[in-house]
Image (cartoon, rainbow, N blue to C red; front, side, top):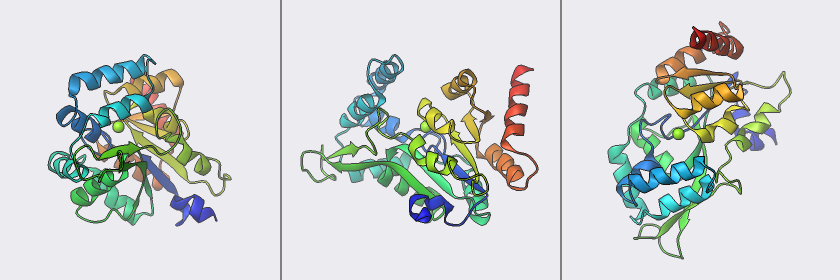
Length: 258
Ligand SMILES: [Mg+2]
């Protein structure tokens, strides 16, 4: 039963790597791109983001509002995103290493599964076999075909005010008995990653993003990354037993205080 509830445990890995998708694995955020270019535009989107930060609306409401402003057929949205999104230049190297070293990658995203899957297939050039995608879904709006104008809407993963509470997926892994529990790592760039990151042993927070300040305030062990080459180096060293999450977080804290 464990393998059904905890798919990333099927191969008994030493490390499981959880990651945000948009802005972490990709360079740009695909949902922002759709809202800005196909929906009501960047200005209204930024206002929506501010309203969330000031607790005027929930992320769930603001995000639905942004995506509802996009009436482009869903297949057309995917085609446009495939032309405009890029992977972090070092993610493929990380993917290959993880695949060879039995390190499952679990993407936890506020985006939609079919978009993430299509982008990974195109950008990696093959099915992302070593990646599990846990994200929101897409569904028909008012009974229409999703591939028609105004035909689709986001279908949230759970009832949380995030739409997708990323910590839900990690908690059962974090609760495994010590002798079975792999090292749990997380990479992210946004505030929605904070609840998830607090469940893992170490967070890689993208340099220059809000998440860094939040981690400092909340006392979450973290280190900063610019791209996936840093993540790969540190993960390799942990896998080889040359360092551990505490040592990396302590070194990051020390260099921040210098
Ligand atoms: Mg992100």
